Length: 344
Ligand code: AMP
Ligand code: MG
Image (cartoon, rainbow, N blue to C red; front, side):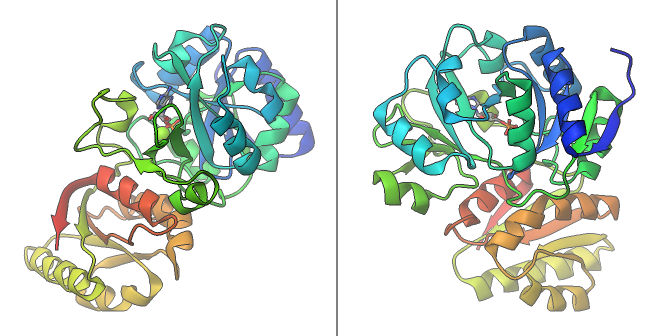
């Protein structure tokens, strides 16, 4: 395909055009409720290959397949355990990815050679209309260069991918802001491989105990997916992440660290909740405000990291926001973006 990316508002006509491009093996970036995805026909190996090239993504990192309806699950999953059925009924459309036994029709490239497939139905009207019109399962990782911060606006996608894609459907900022929760339902209890938009509390209210996969001590079966390991979600600046339960102590440690860096003449940025921003600013940090609570922090965290990069800060300081609700997903992403984690 000759390369001129079309950056289009997601009108009904443009969604139909984008669906046609998907059917013909093209690449379409589109908004979901979590982040922007980079979509291709999941059953077309050449189209899927283009995703890996565009993102510079290593082939051992599997993709999530997006469907427009739960009833299409049989196209990509060999079998659907009762527990998965319950979760799909309760949480789809929504930010929950289920790991299921794979249908042979799904190319190995999509699943990085695993015998399982990751699948979800996104809760975003543009994503649903696009996939429904394309009438194929759509493999879609986040629409950023591999290892970079995920895109939550069309501008972010453009910045990372530009001419590497065919169509960029612009549907404004994404409402949740962090990726889907990836859940392995084959283990007992089911295990969160990646915390995300559906919280552990929400899952437990429906299916009882849910484990969280621990990167430091992987279970005996080894690593479920290589994509879970690397340093990831990282901006250019060096992120330093403060972890600890006492909010005032953590804030104090962060402030001391900031002062030491400023004394060395460093250009320092920070991500902070609104109520914590002012003292950091007074001290001399460039602060990106995440809003009043964890939900707004999730929505703005990637935009904040990208903005601080655009301001050429050398170091970004940020702190843990706890593990309740979306806090767990934020912790996971900041830990993986960080060059250094400081436990207070
Ligand atoms: P992204 O599309 O960038 O949000 O990344 C998708 C992530 O989903 C991968 O990096 C994996 O961690 C996870 N994933 C996809 N397929 C599987 C699978 N079959 N088993 C376990 N994890 C998976
Ligand atoms: Mg990604």
